[in-house]
Every structure is written in structure tokens, then in C-alpha cells.
Length: 356
Image (cartoon, rainbow, N blue to C red; front, side, top):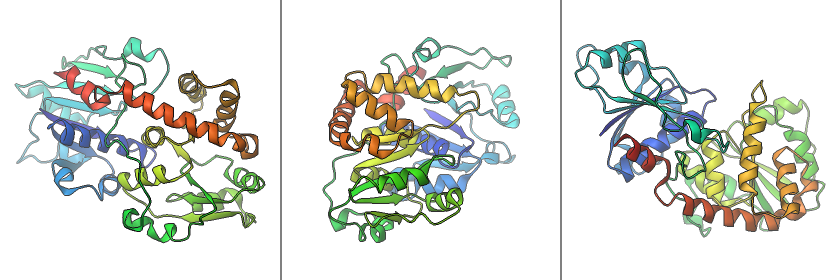
């Protein structure tokens, strides 16, 4: 089948990351014909860089306006149109669907959530005045939800020089053997300066890997030198592809992630993490985080529940750092649990079965 995925980038990375990973799953794992129309093609191309050319060349990446602006070579009508995260289709593109003898199915791909209510809306029709069938599709952790994006499933890497991605080698050469590794990828507004200063008071050595843009964010938010102790080393890395970032997550002892794509990848890496969930003015993110923690910590001890909840709400490291070993064991068990629950192929496979 031919799939058109429409992606409007809101916070620079996450929306594009999910759309690219979904396109790659549909193409490489399920043999589908996929196009992405994106309003920030440069960012999408960066995320897609470094992927095996035999995979990347099968996915047609196009600017947003290419969906309607080429009068001589109009876009072929697809079988499925995906509105990623509720973005509206371009009017001229929609008009072309209305006059086409072949009518596609439109999927409103929603944000991932562990909230119980999503299963009541998942897969339900959304009647439209224009008459083209449209459905809600909710990614989730439940069996009767849309599932999780699994492509590719990260493996346990043994660190060798040859395995380190080229973009990460300069930082990797500075790592200290006695230090634990923490990666940081968070939104503005996180109490990162205070968090790092407290981390330095725990008495352990940490190499803190700042992903692209985080060093600048830290300087802007602090307004002054951090004066971290020698036990804390900050290392910045450049913008990397999704696969390289997945590798980075797998090599750290602890990860701070944000949004949706890196949130799932942190869980599949099987390591403790903080999810810096996107803050919303109506505080809806608090209910969303609480719903995830209820599921994530369902089988955990009360001590570990307290530890993880404090960490996820930006409790200082000295409150929970001593529980890191227990959290690490839980993270590996959670990863195994997720892969078992998504043994049917997860989001891409469930989506293909749904439209079929």
C-alpha cells in the first residue's frame, strides 16, 4: 500500500522522529510504499542521516508544499494518509483526494499515552463532512491500544572503539573509566543547574553527556558559571541521527529524555531515566506522567516507587542516587516486559493490520 505521512514539526525533533521511525518501520519491516511531507525537511533529513541507504532510499522525503504544488505531476492518491499528531492536511492536497476516484483512509495518529481512557477512543471513526473515512489511532502501552514504535530494537552493545559512531568519538575519548555516564536531552525550564550541582555532592564521578543544544540551554538558564566539582565532567556532542542517539542511550547508566520518541527509546535501552514530559498550561502532562508511572512501577517495591517518582519530578539526585542499582534491575525487567507485550510488532504492525 502507499502511505502519505504529514508531519509538522512543533518542538524541533520529536514529531519528526516519530514520523521517520514509523515510515522506516512500514517500509523496511512491512514492505510498504511511504512518503513523508514535512514542513521542516532539513531537520527530518538530519534525523534520517546515517541510516542504511537500502532502507533510507525507499522512503520518499518531500517538503510540505510538494503535496499540492506540482501541477504537471500531481501527487498520486495514496491508500492511507496519516495526520501525525492531528496536523491538518493542506487544503489543496485534501481537494485532490476529494476529486480522485480512489478514496484513501485518513488516520489521525495521536500522541503516545498510558492513560486508561485512550482505549475507548483508539480505532474509533471521526466522521468528516467531506466523506473520506477518518479514524483515531492512539499509541499506547495497553494491549488494545496502538502499541509502541519498536524499529529498530536496540541490542546490548559491547563497547569497542570500532562501535562508537564517528560523531560521538571525540566525546567518547574523554570518558573516565571510574565515572558513570548520564545523557541529558530536556526542555527549557528544567532545573538543570541545581540538579547538576546536587549531582556533584553525591561523592561519585559522573560524565554528563549533553546532547545538541543542551550546553547552550544550560548557560542561558544559569546566567553564571556552574563551578561543578571535578567529579562532574560535562561533554557536549553534536546533532546525531536517531540510530546514533539510540546507541548513546544504550551506553549510559542514566538518561534524561524528553518528548515521545526518546522516551520510548530510553525504555527500550533498559536503563533508568527521567522523562521530561512536555509541560502544558492546563497541567495535563501531570496526569499523563502519573498514568505512565502507575504502569511502569506496578510491580516495583514501595521504595523504588518513591525513588522513581521523586526523580521523574526533578527530585535532586542525592534523594534517589543510592537506589540506582535497584532501578537498573527494574529497567531491564521493564524492557523485557515491553518487548513481550509488543511481540505482535507494535505500532507499525498494528497500524497496518488496522487499515487492512
